[in-house]
Length: 184
Image (tube, rainbow, N blue to C red):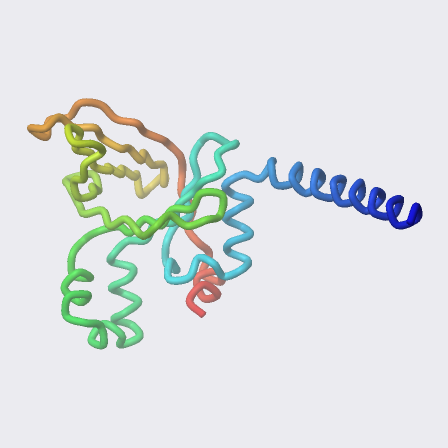
């Protein structure tokens, strides 16, 4: 009986040590680390032809993948798939928009965000933060430098701008070999 309790205690100590080491390894992961793991596992499917975007804050653990409608349109035209889409989807691909797929620690947000062209920016539909605060997302990108600003704008009830919470960073093109892998 004594040997069993000693073995259980040794097992518990070993398990605690392994779990602590595992937790320490995960605690230091950055957004780029999560992106690399997700990409290697093929978990960024349907976002080929896009850009992976990372905040300037190196400690941030979230990132997003950005895809322009023109890339989606071009790929569907090239493979003959555009005519196979439902009419509503065909109509949508004719519009200019960007699709944002975000990830927090490698876990996807609840869905893609479609942002439509608004002069030099891309914006979301309005939604309510609470009963008196309409909000929208505004995304600005310099396509030459790939620097971006991603902001949640707080508006007054008459839809005038009140304030925003923004993050800044840069995007990088997803390499062509990764794009082929992602479409499998």
